[in-house]
Length: 94
Image (tube, rainbow, N blue to C red; front, side, top):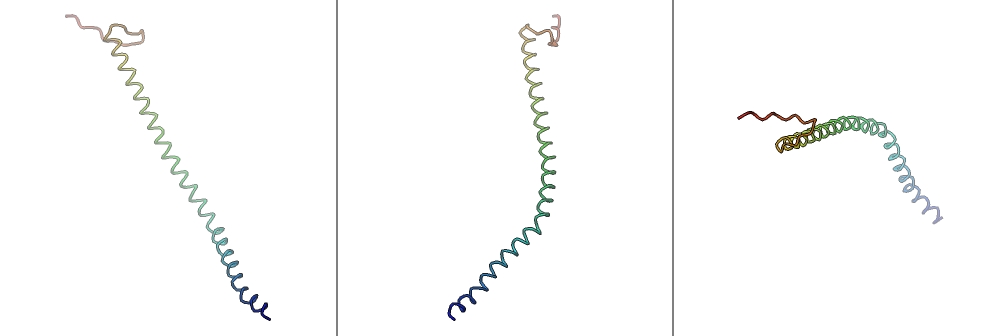
């Protein structure tokens, strides 16, 4: 009789745990499509922003490179040793 009493009192506790686990699983399954869709929207938005940032970085790098090349050309012209591709202003007659 004593064993039946212990089993009878433990049964509601066990079933409560099972019900709690089932409820958590049901909530997880129900919210999964929402999470997937929102993650896809975030990824698409972030991708465009990142693409814009990347393009901006590339443009700044190109501007920096053109600036370095222009300074190097000006220095070569000033020293009197221009390359064939350099566009040097002619010295004005005095």
